[in-house]
Image (cartoon, rainbow, N blue to C red; front, side, top):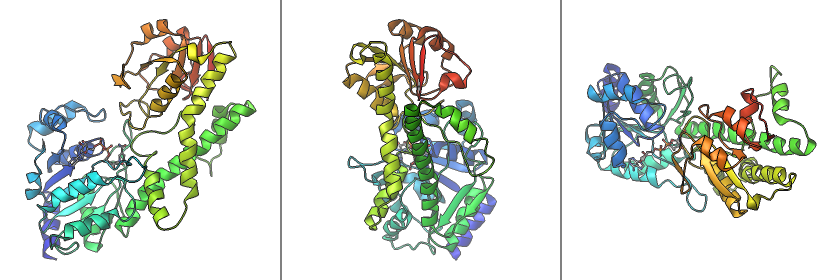
Length: 432
Ligand SMILES: NC(=O)c1ccc[n+]([C@@H]2O[C@H](COP(=O)([O-])OP(=O)(O)OC[C@H]3O[C@@H](n4cnc5c(N)ncnc54)[C@H](O)[C@@H]3O)[C@@H](O)[C@H]2O)c1
């Protein structure tokens, strides 16, 4: 109880040190929000380049402008380091390192494990450890066991829980501070401290009874998205055969005031969440002897979309007596979603690969991504002189859509980017 009381007092007085491990898309906004509330915050990252940039007050994440970062760094509230000695004086540690898949498609917890191993050396009584990285249920328990090898006990000496991160890069409305935050501790006192800690920076904190429940909450949210996107992608393929406009159907269905939620088709799913998180769950449940068929099927359908989009282009060219193998194709947008630079797991990789494997020559234009698969982003106008064949993968708002509509003679639009903006192309438009 002594350790609990000590930390509770520090939290109440807002006089504590926070270390955020991993200053990426998730960690940096968390660190900035706490520093803004006057908390002494250190970002601990293994990437020297990021650490140096942060300490100069320069941001590398679109959602955090450098003008916001700089005053926090100058006032000393926010700093960055590669030195794990930062744990020595930390009261709260938030872990936001990557949780990718390994080469076999299984969870790769090596980053989380490395962070826990480095923390272990400095673990001290009165510390709260929050794991924010998305992972399968049971990970926080497993990591606590590693920390308990020090002889310190969770719930008595140190406290630990899981709080799934819901950050949505590029979202102008829902930010870290106004998105409700689910927290689940490994014991009652840990949950209590998690609530008090996050309440400092987040408007609404939602406690659940266990860390496992918090972990599964995140996987339900993202599996829900993956499955619904897959369903609408399947509808897009069906609609194509039926010669029905899927976009019109979605809007019409969306007029139902209850029991329907709009999801849109696309060239596939990308990013660090939707294509990966459900597979963490799949891995876990298979080890429990359950076959989660929905998850596997959604993954299969979504992974099939790049090939479907390329087949639409092939079909359109063929109907004009052209062969994709002789074509030059401009891919517009390669980030996994609009208005951000993140290309992790982007369907653009598979699309470019497929186009190249069919013999097409490929260039791309993406104002957010300077380099991609050995290419450099082309300026739009010269690229449209190079070719009149366009495949739209990402619909960033700052792309010159009017010029594409004026110059291209075949456009495959996997995002409905043109019609959504009320733009009518001169050439042939094929939508998903
Ligand atoms: N990006 C998103 O939209 C999003 C949303 C919700 C949840 N998540 C989850 O959050 C976690 C982090 O994702 P991200 O997108 O911020 O990743 P990221 O790659 O942008 O950032 C992770 C950071 O951790 C650093 N790092 C790696 N190993 C480290 C170590 N041992 N010690 C210190 N730093 C280390 C990396 O250098 C990097 O800067 C993942 O589990 C992801 O699934 C991501």
